[in-house]
Amino acid sequence: MMIALKAATPQLPRTTAVADHVVAVDETDSTNALAAQMIGDGSLTLPDHQDGELAVVVVAADRQTAGRGRNGHKWISQPGRCSTMSYAVRIPRAIATDESVNGWLQMIAGLVTLDALNGMIEEYGAAPNQSDCFLELKWPNDVFCHGLKLGGLLSELVIPPSSGTGTDADADDDVVIVFGVGLNLALGACRLPTPQSTSLQLHVSGLPSFGEMRDAVAERQVGGFRERLAKFIADPKGQAESLREEMKAVCWARGRQVEAHFTDGTTLTGEAIGLNEDASLILRTQDGTDHTVRTADVGVL
Image: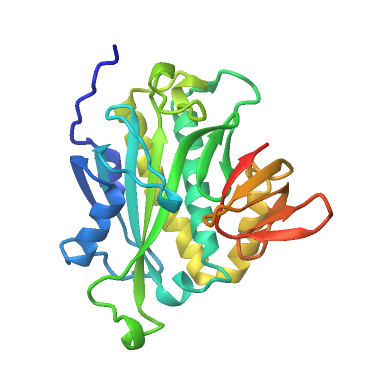
């Protein structure tokens, strides 16, 4: 019989020291939804850019009762075992709505997450159980380890009260991007929600306690979002090319035979070749034709 775990308010001293503000609750429906609600009603504000320094606000919960993924999927997490955090950052509207570059915002969230996890592992002197155990990103929003899902990411645009909408919107206004990050850090094998999921502790030995892991990863994510997004805002096109190169080393789908499942129920099968300049996936079918995939669930065959 599996014992139900009780939620407790996350203790995040390291994250609090580096973030502009931290909201921590024991339970909420979704940290992304809570962040969006607070930004929308003005109870959570993000300062303007200061000398290129981006403000980062964190919303954390120990338990989500209605965690969300892309395309209406659910994100199942367990208190005291899974990190559920949202990071809110102001982004120029012109960049957030530019389809030629805004796909890289999700890729940045993935790279920030990999950096944070790997940095935490190194800090505590932990080590992978197997030599080929390393973290990758399954386009467009999953953290993978050994072909299994360790975490998921969801980015959403929120219009703050001070910004206009519709024809009144100014292209120079800022909007807020909320990056939700869910990570299975300390789940035992018996608690995994699906056969396709995994947990960091199943692949790495010598990890600290869950609370220490969660705080150390979140601290690094705050710094990572601040640094990477500042560079992206300063030079979106140049950073897009750099990110495209960086993704080659960590894109789990690249070089694999995959099947893309679209929201209209259709599918497309082929080899994932790489990413386009706008962060969309290139899928080469058996007849040698390259297809652009922008919104789909991608699974390996």
